[in-house]
Length: 313
Length: 313
Image (cartoon, rainbow over all chains, first blue to last red; front, side, top):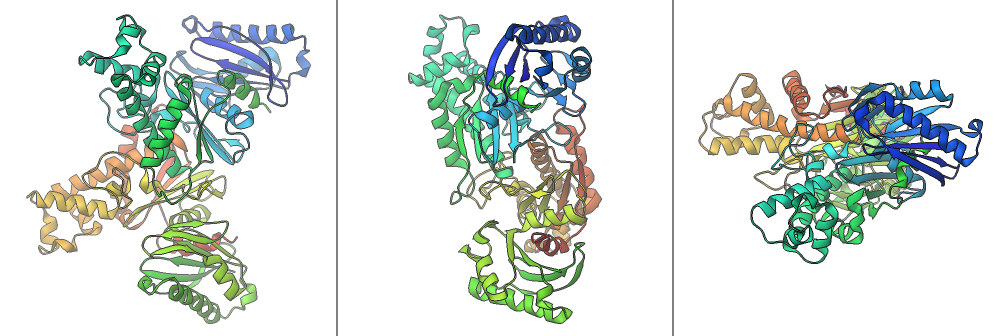
């Protein structure tokens, strides 16, 4: 058995995963990152011990613990180098957990880990190569080539959300302009929709949130788009346009067998997928040549735990 | 011994390369592609036989023949799928040569094989991963990861010149707008310089080519830029700006250990390299993290033959 930990800005989820990457049991607790890394790590350890106890397995039967973190990690040292949402800088996560638990610990980026899960048992199963793109609050990426996760030589690869794909009306959190994340995340979708609303455009979105614009989210926008709302479709089409540039750039570089779309916005399902497939086909290079499949990720939230556990396999 | 063939739009170059990737002997002949693929392939076979005879080696001692082609090839079937400069479509190059010569033949893209050469004995030697970028008439790419060439699952990867990096005042040959090739090739540099000249900007470039604007080339523009000419520097800086976007995008996806710049424009040497390094450092993501080295390719024109030969090793 393996343990997978999905360390997020909102929740810590810990699960037991078997040799076939099947999630057997899991539980979670709020992260409350504002308490600092020491308290959060204490909670991770506590939750791991509870999970082992609840499931009635002995600690000796846990072969490894894998952790996906929302930021940059060094897979070799197991150090969390930088997590903006957690406020973590250079936290020796692997070392601390191994000292406390005496089980081997592996650490990597959360989108990378979710991509690994999709590769093991999800949308990219048995692929020669796959790129997983999370469309959530931000845009993240996980790359698997010939069965190996590719986080890069310095650990700064698979940062697909920070590919430059155009010029935008606002800067990215990273300080640059034009990052894919500022076009294709739910944050980006909401920002652009609000811009259209503030310019006085009529839309059913305002009615849906009863005039409270702070309630506008990706789900509401996609709902309105599916119903034919002009503003919502304009916002979705803009997202799709730049996401397609990002995807064609990935194809021009890596040409993966499969590209899987996950994260909150992928909840829009076939409506989003068909638009993305159509736009990529319209703008891609070398139309006489085949390209990889673009599909929806299949594992949802469980990908984080399953992929983290897979780090230790 | 191995034979490497660099099949270009202008010349066919054939060379004998030893086990250590040292080029022992080579000769070339004009391609004259307008004659059609049959005649060109006859010349390739003739040149291979001449090379073997001239060097005084027996055919049995040639372990393999590798060929780099200026377009898309299927490394598995050895078919040349598409070469716009040669006017080739679905040419069974491997099959034809193996039938004629009874030596195993391997085919891949020319920039990919040049990258392989730089990886074997050049600027990317002993790297965990490297991306080679040719800045010539077009922009090409060669990717090596963990000792393996990466041309993609469908053979449409490493097409770095067709990454979208912005909006441009003219469309790419491929029909799209914003390809790296339309900003960072010698063709692009010349086009933008001519645009500035046509807008009436004063420049020493006009004097250098004695008023004959058709003589403007990358070398002249870089020469003028090094001498401090305003227009030339404006054109070079624009090239550098978009090349840096392309390079940071490659880093955000693959994060290679080394990025090597080759092709005709890399003849501008340190002047170009320093500008590119500085611009990448200025615009890149996650400045607290290290990134790979950006260097000049070292093998020059020989990379094509050496890398092609390496396909068979």
